[in-house]
Amino acid sequence: MTELHLRINGTPRRVRADVRSTLLDLLREHLGLTGTKKGCDHGLCGACTVTVEGERVLSCLTLAVSIDGASVETIEGSDPQIDALQCAFLRHDGFQCGYCTSGQITSARAMLREVARGDLSVASFEGCRHTVPEGPQHLCDDEIRERMAGNICRCGAYANIVAAIRDAAGAPS
Amino acid sequence: MKTFAFEHADTVVGAVRSATAGARYYAGGTNLLDLMKLGVETPAALVDIGRLDLRAITATDSGGVLVGAGATNSAVANHPVIRRDYPMLSQAILSGATTQIRNMATAGGNLMQRTRCPYFMDPSFAHCNKRDPGSGCAARDGFNREHALFGASAACVAVHPSDMAVALAALDARVHVRGPAGSRTVGLDEFFVLPGESPERDNTLRPAELITGIELPPSRLARHSWYLKVRDRHSYAFALVSVAAGVELLDGEIVAAALALGGVAATPWRVAAAEAILIGARATDTAFRAAAELITADAVPLAQNGFKVDLARNSVVRALRRASAGHATAPTR
Image 1 (cartoon, rainbow over the protein chains, first blue to last red):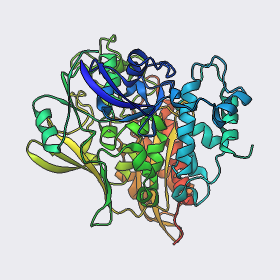
Image 2: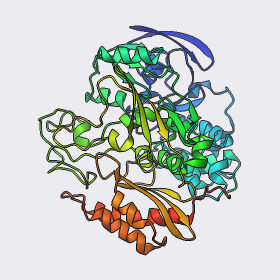
Image 3: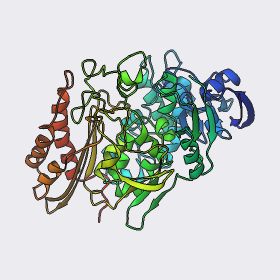
Image 4: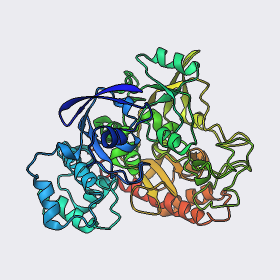
């Protein structure tokens, strides 16, 4: 057993866990934070997406001991009031069974921050001359799809997920 | 998963010392931890190199750039100097995996990732010389539609999965390593190895050597380069074929060319003769087709991957066409 110190959703937590624990199992089994979902457990589906130091990662492929001392945000870290992105998912019916939704929303929140600071996706290379140096000015559907490719929806609610994110991003439809 | 000892390295020297004593380097973990879950890898000890001071991306005196081995794939792809001077590298990195994985995976780890051959990834298959030397190769006569066209052997037909490495090959990158005997640099063309009779080796790193950085020389290809990746689905899949293409044009004539293929061999596949026949030619489909024919003439397809020969030929033409048309990013000078 190894002792870890993590800041989870703003609160310092001390956890004793097996050295083999992934961040995903630590959240779900030791901290009772079951909003983060275990889908494939092999980094293929994105249901376990959380942020570490503000950047989205896969908690199933994060060895908890490797991030000792880090700040982690999960879906439970949201304000009690649902935010604009969550409202957009409701309005556009961006789910069916809902199992991937916490990962989709956590991922999309981080993605909107990435776009705001000018990060690229591979779709950006199809843009105009200034896109690659400066980042895309407009979050088109191709950009949304590419940037959200790490979050699989088994029900196939993609069209509504894209619509919800487009709406929340304030992009024209 | 088998348990293991775990330590955070504070210094490169300390990390190399731990590796010399038998520990495995652990960085982003996106591939190694997965292989540990699958039982393909069973290290007794891990030394975490994620806290070493190896994340910087800095200009070199020669006008190139040195990418720290610990820089994340996202950090490299989004770095302003990489976007401006090596857009093909940015494009290649962003063609691979997903943002979540690129935020975790490091530049050094990208080079160290193992093949995704399904027989390698699943220990319930008995025959894989890369995983279990001497056990045979289930892919040779099994599921091999994704496997190698070039440089394979009777022992192994797996391909290297990295997109980044294909662009690095076209950009003449050099890998900086530190080991028990000191530091050295290895050209990317000498870093990866074909399987031969020892497919358990992916590269020429010596025991306990640690990748500390990847150096790119100055490039004249930024204005006319493209990374084309063809795969079974539009995103988040490994390449069936990929092409890193870059040319330098002078009044419509090709004066420099770099061409490397991915998804077709255990190493990035660069063919000097194909680059040579482009030099002096007009940047037209005629020249691009000649280069493509020259590359694919040496293909040795397996039972299921013959389609990749046509795919490779057409992809080379398409990539050269996109590159020559001028990069979307091309700085106006």
